[in-house]
Figure 1 (cartoon, rainbow, N blue to C red):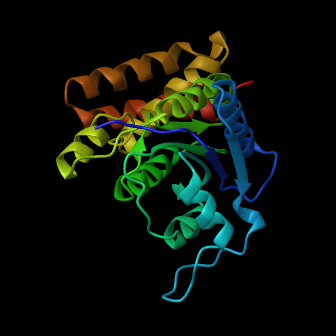
Figure 2 (tube, helix red, strand yellow):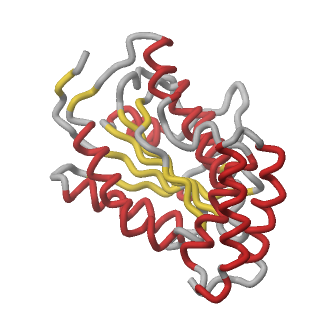
Length: 252
């Protein structure tokens, strides 16, 4: 059942401790999309608050709890540390007050520098959090430094979508409804292999044509084997395609 609401505010959360860097830029651009749809956006930096790790007595800062409760839609951007979201963002998630978020819309953005690895497993953590809080996730945005420029140009549309959807809150009717929704989202079932193929594809997109011949063949072979259900056989091809391009850094 849809519930028509007057959108008061879409909350953008920057989980990175580094202001002005990749995560911040993506969240900011996303919130520009919110505002271009005619809705108010508010951005917070978790690093500005005293957020502790979870204990029985630890609480989230009152202002963050209040903003979380008031928000009609949520955008969470977090950097990737060792295959998962950073501890600051996870501690924030652990400490948030438990309130009724059922049917509010949420967008997750994970940002991986360096090798790019962990961009999918990290965004999965954000969306598992959304799932358990009964937030209705929209399509995830796993980002590496390889597809950053492409994403910075498209994330505005994601922000617009969050704003527009948030005008009609759609609570989940139960576990079946919620699970069906999340099973239909991209990237949430990606394994190490799927992530490696994704990264190889991103590298193919931004690499010089002179570097691509062998890498393209390996990339195509990996994808074909996956389509045939031969996932173990695909691993070597995916790794080779990635290595051929990553270790001769692309000119992005």
